[in-house]
Length: 224
Image 1: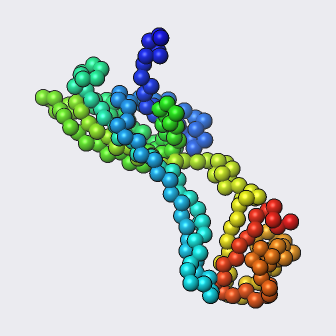
Image 2 (image 1 turned 180 degrees about the horizontal axis):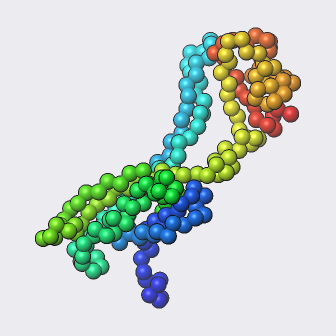
Image 3 (image 1 turned 135 degrees about the vertical axis):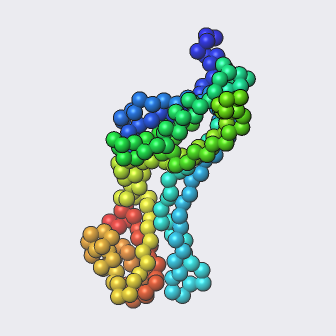
């Protein structure tokens, strides 16, 4: 086993100037010690809609929020790990990733990776707690909590949404005066699709829509 194989894989943050992560900003920050904790969060949003004649609201998916992660880091310059010395420069370099950049008019985009972990987003928050100082006031130890939020390009969002996917069902809340053919025209671009709509919702009278009624919009494969 060579020296490279013995070296510990370190958490690395690379800065980019664009949301497509194609323009490196030339800034790389590497952790002295790997995270003591890594938390991942994913949240979906559902909207409750009450249909006429039902006792409980229907939960319909209205979208997802960007994934988020939190990293807990320890910076130590006491000499317990590596050479002794102040951690000020390393900490400043890390916080630079959260600063407004004049050329892009926003902070950098960040690619964080460590082993099988890979996350692309923006640094939304950095909380620093200083734990130890030398005689001159130079910080020797600090903990840092980093919060990152996922950043996707418009192309990636469109690919994930797949609005014409054959396995994607949607819902429609009927407003006052709406008809099945006008809904079909608005959703599918063709009023003739009122028949698949009526069949999917088991409507005996397609003209008898009720305000507040929740309709199922069948996906592309079922509309034909």
